[in-house]
Image (cartoon, rainbow, N blue to C red; front, top):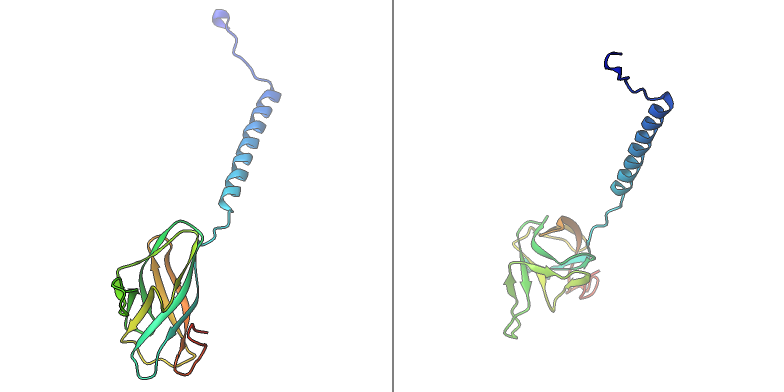
Length: 168
């Protein structure tokens, strides 16, 4: 060779060991990526015990349910009903009177149960289609962070004591 320099040669064993190390590193990365992608996600908000009450001859329904929030605080922004009409979010009167006051949202505290019931926050469905006791209505709840959820609410009538005052 001119100039006396000889090219370096790697042994076959060194090249194979390099490829083996690279392959093992890629395999380890793939395994780690698979572990993080397989974590089950639990919805932080769950809704249950939903029912609506319709007294005979009254076109307004009162809606009640329980919201379990296992995560960070959230807000219930709106509700729609499969029975049609307009769903209004109502809270207790601030003046101590019997009238409820309309709200723009319900605050859902983190790591707590929130009950929509006759003595506090609740829903009112105005102008819905006729409903029959024992049937179900789908309520679509829209949360600021948890997104949209659907829940079945059974129709009850307090005058016939179907399920009692607090529903089925």
